Length: 127
Picture (cartoon, helix red, strand yellow):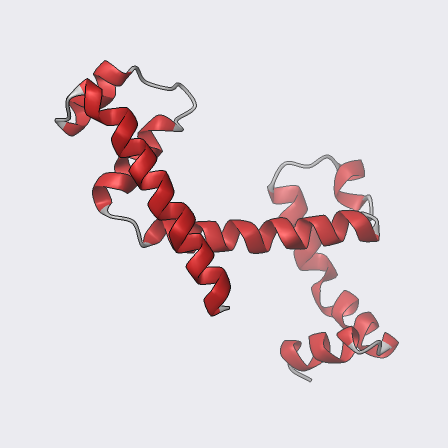
């Protein structure tokens, strides 16, 4: 049975499909958790249904956000990346990096975020 078939069957309540998914993919899940430097105990801990639902919704939201981000102009993507850096640069540094007057950074940032918001909302409607 293909993974898609297994998932559909499991979603319909087929316990054998769930067991097959666990058998097939548990080592991959374990390796992925460990690759992200989770401790053995954290990697082994089974999250509850509420946590799983939250993770699924967060993943869907994040995916929609990154798809919308990819539709932005290169200038907007570069500006937003600079402004969310771990060590946030000053507006003077951003202006110098982008060849943009300091006074234009805030308004441009708002236009880029508005475009991102609209693009995300359109993507939701298309889904």
